[in-house]
Amino acid sequence: MPGQMTGGGHLPRRGIMSHMRRMPQLSLSTTFAALSLLTIAVITTVQASVQWALLRHDLLERESVATGQIVRADADATLRPEDFTEWQTPDAVARFERFARRALLTPDIRRVKIYNSEMRVVWSDEPRLIGERFPDNERLARALQGETIVHLAAGGQPENRYEVDLEEAMEVYVPLVLSGRTPGTARIAAVVEVYKDRSQAAASIARGQRTIIGTSMAGAVVLFLTLFGLVRRASRRLAHQSLDLARQSEALTIAHRELRATQEQLRQRERLAAIGEVSAAVAHGIRNPLANIQASSQVTMDTGTGGRHLDRIISETDRLNRWLHSLLDMVRPFKVRLAPVGINALVSDVADLLRERATTAGITMDLALAPGAPTLLGDDVQLQQAVLSVIENALDALPPGGILTVRTERAAGDTVAIVVEDDGPGIPPEERARVFEPFFTTKSRGTGLGLAITHKVVEGHRGTVTVEPRTPAGTRVRIVLPVSPAVEEPV
Image (cartoon, rainbow, N blue to C red; front, top):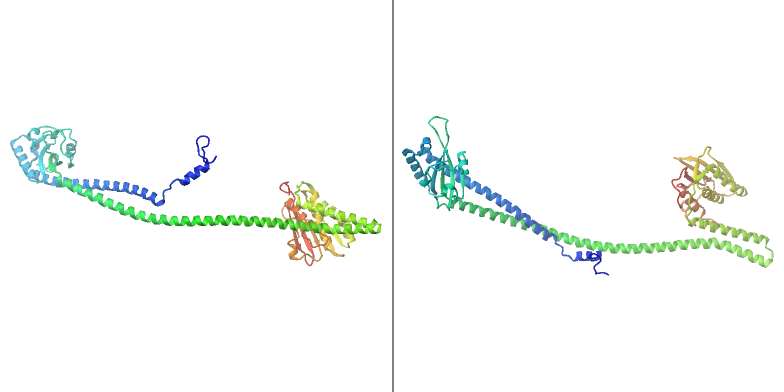
């Protein structure tokens, strides 16, 4: 039953479709808003992160350059290369203290340590560290390779175990390159580690971070609102177009239904017209023979003599039987039964059947059979009927003294032609176009089925039949048949 669950717990197809139609569908603007917001958020986050990292790197780079210049200037003014190897001498210690005092004069430098190339503390404002080595300090090792290192978070290393006031400090490792007494012997002799107040650098970084985040968010909002406005306008336009298309589709559906109804009415009228035409032809074909039979029977009853009138009754009965037989041949399908047929023999046999009639009517019948005409595959009975109908029509059209010519010839390709010509009055163009229509005739005693049957038989053999005027007068009927038709099938 509709609306109930079927086996397996599935909804029927109609129920599924109606359920899908009831499901809420996201509009184009809503979908775009969600996707674009997510995309812009991701892009903005990545962009802000990259910019902040670059800004932080740039600020730390400037801090390392500035601190390095100050420290190296003080070291060049106060220290000697041998101080780092003979670091325990009173002169070296005095110079280390003088260097530290000069460095501490810089407002943001809070503490100082000096390492020699052996990663040993040779001087520190924390005396307990002097003389100790720190080979595991990675930042110190990099500084000894010539790189100035800036690290925002100071402390937490073994060398900071006595230093407890480093929460707001950053550490900077500055390599010292001191020139020896011999030219060209400059080398990294020591590393100075200073602890600086990081509040100013942190404030600059935070300020830059806020600026990056603010501008990125503002740009993202402007971009989102602009794109959303464009898409919303396009979505509204598409919605209007969709409504227009729906209305046009509904109008086309209605027009289609009306057209189908009109076509059905036309088919009904055509069927009624065809039935009327057939009925009129049948009535006309039967009425005249029946009238003659009735008249002959009445005369026989009135006079009591029936010889001549009985012959007429039999003749009209035969005529009516032939007409009905032709009508049945026209309307019922028949099958082409292929067999070898000599085209010259077939035409000669048909001409022999009608030669006495032509002689009686004073008509000359000439045969022109092509020597060596091929034998074709066809239905000899049907082909005889087709040729017979054409020749009979020509005999009916000719007056006494007329000439009828029947010839065979090879045609284009693997085909053969049968041509029937007469020198009669010819067929008017408006009637020539209708000669193959069933029931069309200009003869008072004609059925209008002979040439229609001819056309059907020739087409059943995959051939063609044409009617054309003949110069200077008369008509030419040309039947072209393939030597080997394609198939056998009902016609």
